Image (cartoon, rainbow over all chains, first blue to last red; front, side, top):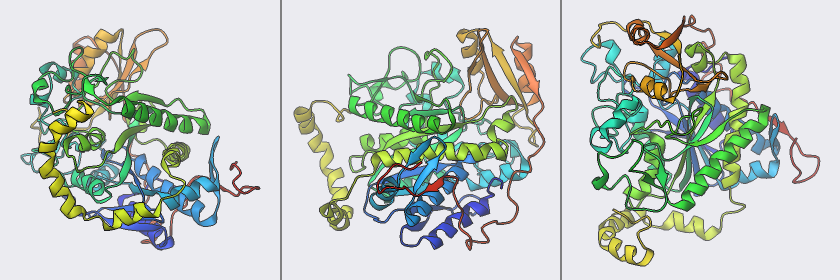
Length: 414
Length: 112
């Protein structure tokens, strides 16, 4: 076996959709890539109105294994469900009841290759390419092609305004220079690949969890990525422009996360780590995404425009969006040769895929309800969301002061 | 040299720094110095940290001339580990995952 080329990623999804038509659906994403590719995701689930979990991979072109992790996760769930078996990944096991529960009562959506143009370029040229292949801002210089998709999302995208100038010194925040690896594009959400992920979140409005796969540090990361966090001062948050220019450096600003949400995302990240580590004794760690593994916890890695923070931030920024808990998973393989770290030998990747798939199944298992009440399905089918959403947006500014009085400032701060 | 007309082949290396202060100094040199998806910081048993980096020769040479302890590693030749053609024959064949499908001996029993 070997890594999948971009055509194989597509045909694998199509093959699964054809083989399991009762419990899967091929989803065509609306935005074509710069090179004209149409991307697909696969929904696995017997009930389209169930809650959803979304897994994405390969925003960064050179992090090849994420696509395989998603494709083979889908294959495992569909085959195990259809044959009535459990799934065993080394020392981590899921019984058949769990698999049945996931597929019957949850929608598992995999989008294995967010950035197929970049993956194709990297696989053909062995270029350690990170970005997409949009040349719009390159000025004709091949070295300046592409946008870092994981700095392009509309979350604190305008880093020069939103962050303390000192945060730029970390060299990991973002960049407005097309020649840099972290170039964030000419505008937030400018890239079709970014908008495809947003479309999935909008279309599957009952998405509850999101996990984006990267490599190669061996972490499961939870929000936030711009600064340290706190749960006591709701007004100190990414929407509050009074804190512009203060984020991303030690001391002062800390990003607000409700205590209950912190408990949930931290617990879920640890649960995923435990499932992964159970397969063959790995050492994955759960961390807030702003911190670097291997340090005392004081070295931070502030980021802007990332998809995990964008996804979790949506319900704060737009009252019609549901809350989606978001994680980032960095699968792990380390070699002094960075190319090998990004592209582990396939024999090693065959060990990594079941490890990570165990973690993903665990996240599904933890969030699959035992049953879905029929009135929930009816409500989700019949409620006129297209009328409701604009009304809520209209009323929300008027209702917010009332909510603040009733609920306190929690989650309703500016 | 951002305006070079052709992408130059990049080098990889590992930088060793003695403490977190020097680590911060290294990370602050982002931009054209590529730390991977996110910086990988490895605590050394003897103290200090190792950080893998990628960059053009001139970027890495500048690190060395500024006193960073850098060991260069030649990037390996392109791997042969990518599929050719279409193993799924244009959707006619569905992939199989890596999980072992296990039938429980008792209803609702734990797999494995």
